[in-house]
Length: 119
Image (cartoon, rainbow, N blue to C red; front, side, top):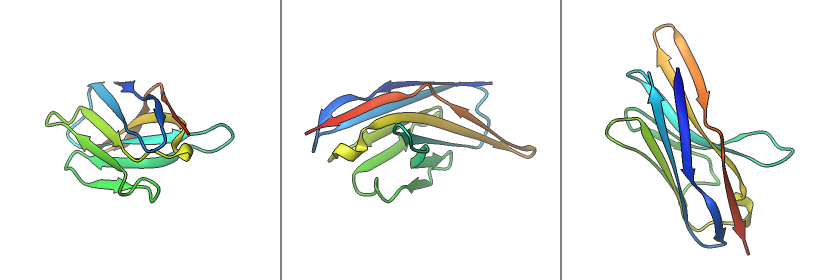
């Protein structure tokens, strides 16, 4: 079992910055993909960015050039640095971990962190 605990987020002005942090505990395995997704009321959860345990990253178009995802050497902590925030970045941000092994994969989610961008 894997537990994900998020921290950071909060309120920022448009053009400002925020940082999200997610710490994974439990058996995360030797290969996993950690990432951030976000969701606003009435909409589906959408990808923001992911990073593999090998360091390969993937960003949504809306995040490219503004957000940076990183993972620490233990591979159990992932952060999302969000710069040049826009009003449309307001959402609940969820940390995710996909644990991959020879038998398939398992998905885990954090509890969510509110990010609110004001004008």
